[in-house]
Image 1 (cartoon, rainbow, N blue to C red):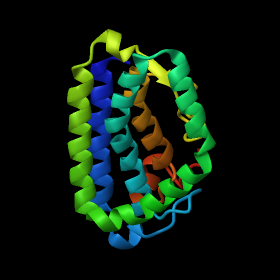
Image 2: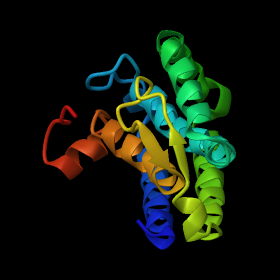
Image 3: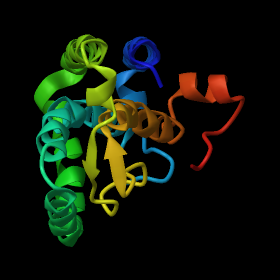
Length: 183
């Protein structure tokens, strides 16, 4: 993907996220999702969290890309060893995220982080976007064994779209033509 394509998908997601939160009632946001233990509001926070993760993860990729591959391979192996605690923390964080930020705060944060990522990806050289590192594949199904910075910028949208299919909001059912689909 080109930086402009990544920036365009960030724009699309930013608008979609705002629409989902603006059109849902509080009761709908508290309804369970399809295939997760979160409710719709908590899952939306988790979807936002993917972008927050990349805001910091891109610096980690830049750092490890300057080191021998064995450094990021060892780092990924260590993180993979901590997969179980990561999933517990990841789950618990999304339980409290909507309470801490509120739904309007989630919209503002998505707007801010998407804008920052758009500016950042447009400022990256092709050489920088093609550098990469090894990843803890046990942490997320969209993490590959080795990822370039370009793939890292695209990752949160893959994550977002995956979880969007698990939302049970009326607006997501209308767009899919029925019940949410399992990924």
